[in-house]
Each structure stands twice: as structure tokens, then as C-alpha cells.
Image (cartoon, rainbow, N blue to C red; front, top):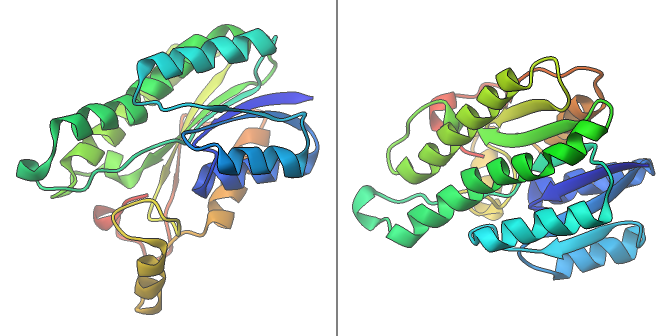
Amino acid sequence: MKTAVITGASKGIGHALAEALAQTGEWQLTLIARSEEELKKFVEEHGDAHTYIVADFSKEADVDRVIEMVKNQSDQLDLLANVAGIGVYKALEEVERQAWHDSLAVNVTAPFLLTQGFMPLLEKAENSLVLSVGSGAGCLPMPGRSVYCTTKFALRGVMLSLSEEMAGKSPDISLITLGSTMTGFGPLSLEEKETQELQGKTYLTINTVVKKLMEIISAPKRESEYTLYPSAYEVQYSTT
């Protein structure tokens, strides 16, 4: 049985990825999110072979607690999926200092510390993988999104640098850079995105994203970065 830690697992891409992995019957999952309700429901539906940890990654102590709990319950780790994220979409003068700190903590520091903390477990597993979800906002600057772009630029830098550092070793380090996706994450609600889609804007579906994630996870060797954008997509207006 393969083992995986998935952050941001209570909704959106993280939840859908957990569902896809659980349905294979080949994975034992540890799910991480801030709210317990959906995590508890997942374990009830898919069996207590899976576990969950409630944690808030804006608090470094919670990141450390997750690392220690996983290390205490697992001898090795096949997959770390860094999916958790927060988005702040405000003009400079409207950005609260705490929002800046929280964004960096959740979107950059937590993936780095989890990768570092789980490295001894990842090194023990054959063909292991650290897979982080990035954004087109980590490639191009956007007005009114300086905080979010900063964190996604930083995440991209961290993961591509670690991929170089770990070249030829285990685990593989991969980043998937996504365009706008039909979830509730971002400056628009799911309903607002659905309305925009009717008006001609294109979005990635969660199924499309998860299919690509599963392909990366099952691959014998991975690239350092994958990009996935909707058809007729203009990157400069993107956000995950």
C-alpha cells in the first residue's frame, strides 16, 4: 500500500485528488485541512485506513505538528501533494499585514517545511514524489494581486530549485502550473465562474486537473514543471 499526504484536502482540487487516489484501492492517505467536517466524512466513506489531521498552516507550530504526527505513523512516504493555498486579491493600500504573512506561510513556507520535514520518509520510498500546485500567477505579474503573485512566484522558485537539487535522486520534485480552474478558490465564487463560462470564458475542470495529477503521480519519471491551461486561454488573466 502506497502512502500519501495531501494538504488542502477538504475541498476543491485537494479533495478531488484524494477521492481519485482512494478509489484506486492502492493508497493510504493522510489528509490535511483547517476544517474537520469534510475530512471526517471522507474517512467514514472510504475507510479508516485513511487518516486526517486538522491544521492551520498559517501557524508554523501546526506544520511542525503535522510533520511529527506523520513521521510517527509512517515508515515511508510515496507522495506529498502540496495543494493547500490561500488567495489575497487586493490593491496595495488595502492589504493587511497579517494577510501578507498568512499568505507567505500557507503558500510558500508550509510546502517548503513539509518537503524538508518529510524528506527522510520520501527518500525511503521508490519513485516517490513531491507534487505542488502552482499558478499562472507565479509566471506573470498581475495588478491587484501582488500578494498572491508573490507567493506563487516564490513557490515556483522553491520547487524548481529543489527539483534541480534532487536531480537523479528520490523523491522527484514537480510543480504543476495551472490556469483558471472551476473551483471556489480565487477572487470569484464558483457561481460567478459558471456565469463567466456561459459568457465565453474558459476554465479547467477539476476532472481535467485531477486526471493530469494522476498521470504525473503514476509516471515512472517526472518533469520539474507541468503547465495546464484552458483552451484559448490567456495566461496574463489567469488565477487558480
